[in-house]
Image (tube, rainbow, N blue to C red; front, side, top):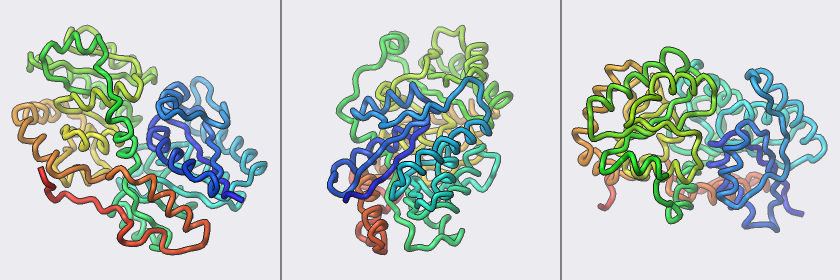
Length: 392
């Protein structure tokens, strides 16, 4: 009988990073029976991603309601997942990242003595308020996890420092690089509205949605973008605005009236990847973008006070700038002045987060975990990221 694996998805980033994992498991139907559960935390965005991989959820748990608090989301996911696990009894529950869906689903599995596999395990900022609530979610999930699929050596070291047994850790690389490579030859042109504004100008891609930035932080980011565009006539800023009403209101109030600032609704993943590929630089508070941009040689300025993706900073591919407007404006000016030099360095050092084979490593490590074999990955099978220069 194949091993039964339930994979739970809630948000767009989870779908991006788990779609190649689902596809990899389904390459072995005699070994694994995979069921994909969607909580609908980001229903429309999640559907866009799965459609791009020609995947559909096997079950939509339909827990989302307008205006839900974090506690309500967590309670609803826990309640529904309790029933799912009780009735289905998978051999392994697989979760990704650090959302409320991840924590509640892992807790439900723990209550039923079902092992939890955690993809992207071991990321730490060491500040429970940044990112909030994700830092707490991922620390708590680690306590409940059997096999830890750490994306990098640094993440594995964090887990070892928390006394996770080395035999339960596999360094796989980040599956987001698998997703990017999957789409590399499928990128179309930029949206017409964006292309018509560019007309030979340089594109700055902006994303901002983190809960800890709501209020003054988000306002500061928007004010900085406004000044940057005014100071650099050869620049167009493109901002796909998160669907959250707080983000929408702030962005449109401050940035909605400038002809070189394009505010877009949430865009399909392929369109967003195309914008990353063409961007001169990216100004973001997103963790996933920090992992993706090095594959395109695009510098990233991180509008947060801390990052759990320190590899990009260590490799000179990203820089933490916070939300102080003057700091952001100065940093953008410096990157724009030296863009070709910065990009050359990033392209030569490669992406420290992955090599496109993370999903295959996760399948291999899962097979060994379910068979009771250790180690989960042999040294020669493990991902090893580096900042060393590669062949040009």
